Length: 181
Image (cartoon, rainbow, N blue to C red; front, side):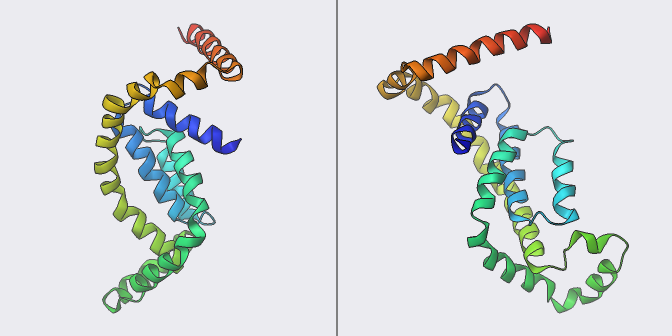
């Protein structure tokens, strides 16, 4: 049931009236948060910062949750990347002074998986934006109407359970829109 809710949130975001960049940024932050282990101050700082930005929060949470499912497979690569970054001899003096600052140890950047996840997430953030904005626009322009007009979608939405759920959803959105005015 949780997976169905995730899929519904993704399709609602893609079909919403939100700017494609907000959805792409939600995906970028979701991947960044999925790559960083969540038991440190760095993860919480990135998570809290995301709420002060204009991004699609639902998409971020869904992408992060799906990404966390794949982390056991990605951790060895993040460990290798983090180890490579932390053992650069030219940065030893910087790391020595940086990690001895107050509160910096709580970020746990000295952990190879945290450093690797943060570095990879930051490196992937802008390519994700450049790829996902055209993907969202293309979906809205070409794919959305084909899905709505397809026979299987019409058959699916005409089943009693789905038709009833759609009716309830429309009535609740109508009621909530009256309270906002």
